Image (cartoon, rainbow, N blue to C red; front, side, top):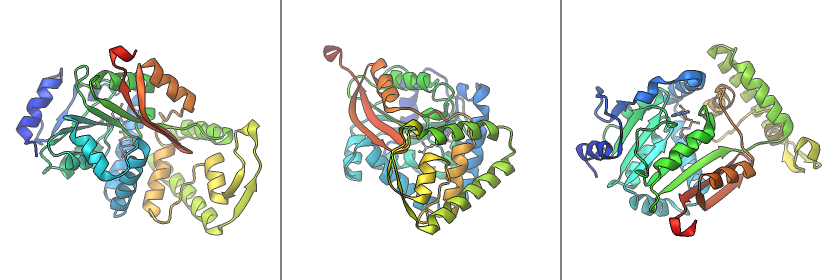
Length: 332
Ligand SMILES: C[S@@+](CC[C@H](N)C(=O)[O-])C[C@H]1O[C@@H](n2cnc3c(N)ncnc32)[C@H](O)[C@@H]1O
């Protein structure tokens, strides 16, 4: 496994910014962490969410579900395939790493690579405390829209479930493309998908209303919509829905809770993941003010405008995701 000293030395080679020393040897605070601006509310919401979830006994089940999902989102058939891929990348960047469990996963699959996790919220400090023994893993608090890394210095950038929470997602995307190595580097990114019209309208309304609510009120509301989701799910009612193009509602046979969930209101409930995870998932949706949604066409446009080619593209009801790489000069 790469040792800590070699990791910081490699960091210094690829970063344009002095490292500000911290009490933890796997952690530093970047200059961009102080430019919070209007993103403050979103970061407060995530600091709060992660602080609460860190205490939850359900988090290991959630982490496993997230890892399995990650492989599907980015086109890896098995964890072994993903490990082979990561081992061919010297520098790996988990952009918006939250509590750092994915960065820690990458670091354990690729022990001879440097893995860096950056997040704006206080979760990243918890991450550094939680994973002190993986010497090839470094964390930093800062803004992924303005990274310290020089152009083309990162071999694998993973921005999973983050970009839409940044202040200017398209600019953040450009920055992550900038740091991706043009020779064999890849950039994996996840985008929230646009949903049916009533759900989009209600989400926008709720998000702006939530900015005037206290944390207690937000947690209360998250509890209430979770109970609603559970009660609807417990009914086990299946309904036939016609196509309603004017409302962008797709017809088909739906479980009642799923129908309301996809088309009207995020009232997440998943028995297997547990009650706390369901509440946090609902909190995570409505509390951050920044949460852009994309159509597939918008995602493809962004990829094109940034001179990227697609290695893998995935779409499901909730999201679009994929792995992209820079066109070689010959193929342009
Ligand atoms: C939904 S969480 C996803 C976390 C992690 N990638 C995962 O998959 O578990 C979104 C994360 O993005 C972080 N974030 C939002 N805007 C950011 C920014 N401009 N710079 C760094 N992190 C940011 C939040 O603090 C939060 O931890």
